[in-house]
Image (tube, rainbow, N blue to C red; front, side):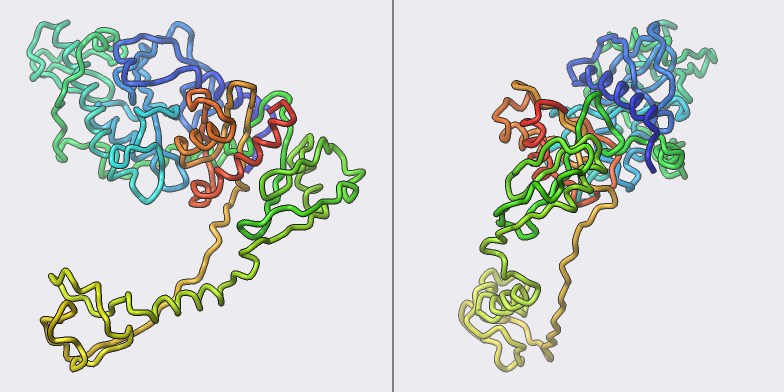
Length: 451
């Protein structure tokens, strides 16, 4: 579902303004003006009032003096619901009013790395188990800071206060204060090292059905996917790579697309070709018609049959073991053939000795076909390249590897590479293949001198 041109223009200005707000842990205690931090379902809503202060209590959480709660999302939403799950964890511990929560995509920064693997990446079903405890701590830390600010104001014991629906409440006096009224004072309080977490019986969001926050925008067409994003004056490149890994372009016939409208250039790129035009459809249509000859290289003869034969030969040597013997450290080295074994043929002594008796040995082969990680959305990105910086907007699950890949391709410090993420439907292929496509597209744009 495509956004209208007006939607695209609005989205472009929102994304560019947002990137100027770099959230890191060192921002705790700072008061800032913020534009463009909108909920996914309000992606085209009006900008914040200039009078609103939005204050970071930690790298993941900001509260506005208008009572808005902005939660930073580092993980790529690819249909798994992580854009709902992780913000809900923070909101639960904070005691936020869920209807006032807004989401903001994180920059590429070490503060937003997966705490288990120390890498900013979405994949392997790791997001919830990796970030759950951290998100709870961030929400609980901010909650205790707000409670401490309220307790100082009322001169009461913080233990007599709690948060609920975006307010701090004092049980005995029934006084209450909105988060927006407390956030400036809370930002001056040192974050607790070990905030107390809520018990499961206190949860009001977690474990309960929640509507997916990004669904309304996806349904009404306002969600900005990679191909929806535009920059003023940008051109479009459609890329065709050699169908075999390790191959390259031998030649192409530029005259085969003579007369196609909007064509700006045809560019050789590593192991492929790119057609650059005034619109994506013009570029793609010309690319489909372009006569290109490829040299498929040393892997030209690789097929499902040859791979199956390779695996068969590997299985037939003596470095595989069909019988697992628990506790035998030498079991992986053996000299007997890799075929189903009768119990009487199992070695009784030596390094390969089997200590248990097996009445029957069963053998069965299983095969798994190769599957193309074909994407619903064509793999894509938008790039703005200058002599000393690269800025891209892309549907990607690997912001950090994208940054490092581009830094190497353009021989720039990684700090000069800015990566902005979008909604995407590129799934698993995005993480493994998109880096190559980005480099190719960027090479084309670099020669053109424009986005």
